[in-house]
Image (cartoon, rainbow, N blue to C red; front, side):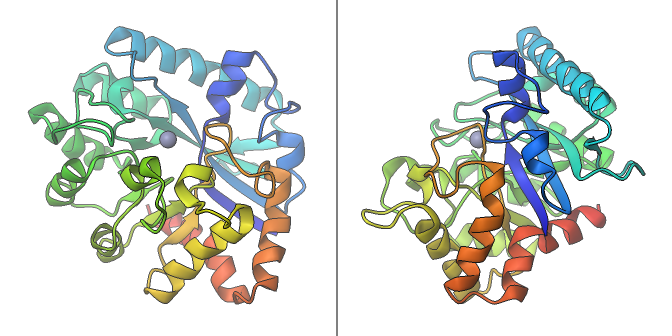
Length: 302
Ligand SMILES: [Zn+2]
């Protein structure tokens, strides 16, 4: 089976806990991901909101260097997406929090040279670029330049974590297809989920722009009282299909980045999740789109 997942924080956890990517107790290890025929994962370097300027740049470099060392060490299991190497796991390097550029366009260029192909513009607070889901305001003058240059470099921009104002400003500024790597539809009552999930108006724009939305497994974003785990994920999938978003839905697990119900928790569970969704009556065609096909089509064309 094939899997393509738009977001995890495993690279940072490996660095911070000093554990191997190959074999660990995290949500993703190479040994457990390699049970699938093909597993493509966007590995984000999450930049905490306390880090700005040089501190953010240095932290990004430390986590990314550690990750690339692991990729080189286990090159029978993992290689970078687009490389010709035939490995069960393929990785795309991403950044969660544009402050990893240190607030300069030179820093953005350096991220591209370091292999970053997707950038989540903010985390929850504001940064040099825009304002996140737990802050007020929109794009800065620098942020607008950042978007233009990132698009020219061919970096995919990611609107997960933007607040509504920033999202709608971004939709005006940007010209290329974009993604929400780990966000859900606004159908849960949780106040934290309300801020992070996407309204129909937002989903319609992502659809028009031929983007992607990675469904996040975070309990706060998908669960309602009595609707947990795979059942909660199924509600999201059902909403996407019923409302015409079947061609933009993807996986955005947020493995190693949040609290996840035991049914969904860990890369080794993803195959079971597929079969449980199949048993619930979703078509094989729709589930293939969700688990890999939409994402593969999108990244293939980038
Ligand atoms: Zn996140």
